[in-house]
Length: 321
Image (cartoon, rainbow, N blue to C red):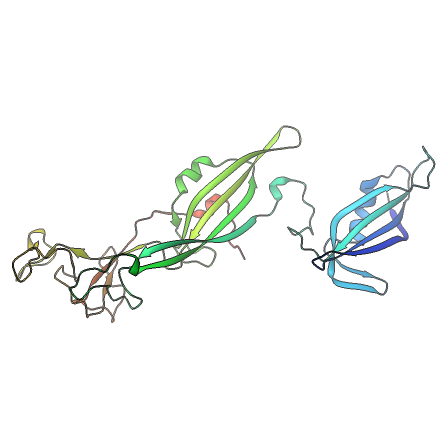
């Protein structure tokens, strides 16, 4: 079951309009037995010309042309019909064109196909409540600035991952959909990756063997998917009242005794000083900006609304680099 390389029969090169070069080589090989077939020849050719090896033949060398999996193996045409075959013609190809996947390992089982990973950006317009320094966007009468003038274009990176699976984890997909990562993922901190969509297709392979092609979509936000909510309301803390008690707040009045309308609140629910830096807290009341926020400044609350999940349970890779 051994195969010997006899020699090169022919060689050619083509160059396309993009400048990519393709080399086609034809070889003559001989097997030790007429009982050997193309599979025996293939194993020898794989050793002589590994997929991914650079084109190097005598004085000819192209370091950017790599051996591809493309190959044809046929019986030597000089044989008489019915004559036992021990000579084979093998044609293989080297090219500078990129391949769609790493082919150094032959993949026969579709479940071993590598991940197909792609990305994009989602663009949305958001009405901003503060400027880049965290200062509330207020008019001179302390009313909130609204409308297109304070809208900002926000772009979020998206990630799409496709792979083959022997099962359809539909119940898991349903439970995890729209949740955010509960631990760092792909270089993003916790709560910065959201599972947004899933598509699936059942595929037939071979004889009555079915598998599923899954495609998952994710949105990322380096600033986190948590909400930063400015404290705005119509009720403020009454003079000489204890804060954080329901009965300590009443509708804010202006100098004419009329209802003032929504006003920006500070940490204790009194009318905030818009000239002071904002005071940012989490859902537990912890100061998230120690040493910089002012108790008299506008209050901003960071609230975790989206639920968390271990997104790796979906079978996605731990790295997309």
